[in-house]
Length: 320
Image 1 (cartoon, one colour):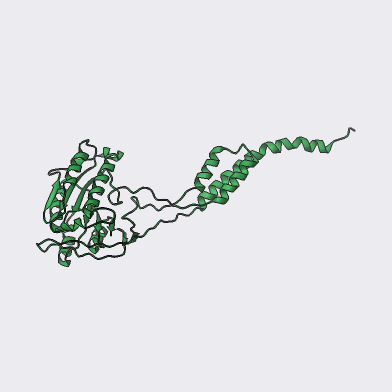
Image 2 (cartoon, rainbow, N blue to C red; image 1 turned 180 degrees about the vertical axis):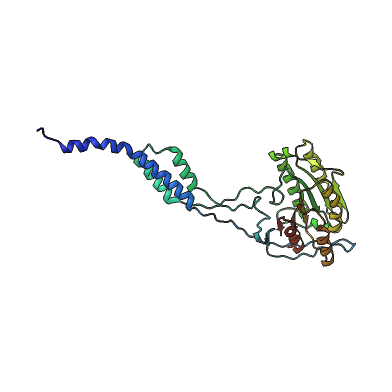
């Protein structure tokens, strides 16, 4: 009977085990990636803001005035939940930011790569990108941080009363802030691919009187001459007169009902008397139920603007 070299037989089996080792490592790496994705919790971002400003005079017809005081910049959104305003920034899509930190996973990946050069680069890239996710906010867009969807029909109602000449923390005046936001948001929308769905806009600038732009109809975001026209109109606006909110909305009503406006951006830096506020809230109830009204308050925390946004499924933003 021939001699059997058991040591040599064991030696012959090792290459097969060695060849299967990279596949085990690959499977382990993918399992770690799946486990990491399942266990990473979302963390809602937040911010805060503070400031104060004094507003100027109201109009002489008793419909509105401005009497502003510094307040906290924490405000409710359309669902009544808190929205912290810092430099008037509001997430455009209400999506929570996500913070992820997984240094241990990166170390495990590195060790696996050191043990076997056959670990696929695709798995390595997925794990590495997940471990580097941060909660850094994206750049602000839209009108004072609220999305401007170029596929919708919209109306901007902006205050040009005398108090809008008051200084703004980041601009020469509140009027300059409004102008910059208006032109920038329309410029951004003109490059939005959703404009192909027929989105359009018009503007009502109000004080003691109103100016409508264009005088008839709306401008389409897709039209090449829309931006130059709106820039000329906005640049020519000046701050003077009172804050007649009701007149602005009386002018806006036929535009909203006749041209099927879907979204309104309503900006002011003033407050009105309780009687006028009540009358305005009642008037707005006549508008189409599907209309969304976003409101923006400059230099003052406005309970009226907050109520309007809440009753019409919009967002309320204040810039103090």
